[in-house]
Length: 121
Image (cartoon, rainbow, N blue to C red; front, side):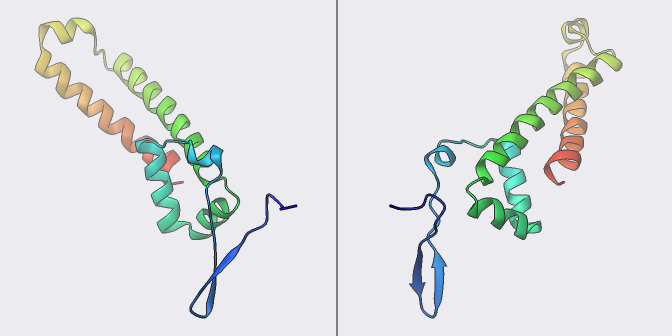
């Protein structure tokens, strides 16, 4: 009987390297922009957290949760900024270039907030 949590190893020179295989649940997770940014951040800056999540089979699940939170936060911030700055469909109809400029500005600020508060945290 095999233990679900047991790890097998392979010899590479003088070292034993764990054979890490994604579980079916992990393999089915598709990460978007936010999840990939968070995964890269963990891999480069929080190596212990990254390795722990990876060996426990929870890395992609964790990154998918961050992805969902980041999407919700981004959408909420964009809507709040649009409302507070008076960006309306009327502006879009009357001056499309101004509307595009202001929306791009809002999206860039929202993205910076999400990256600072969720992704790189």
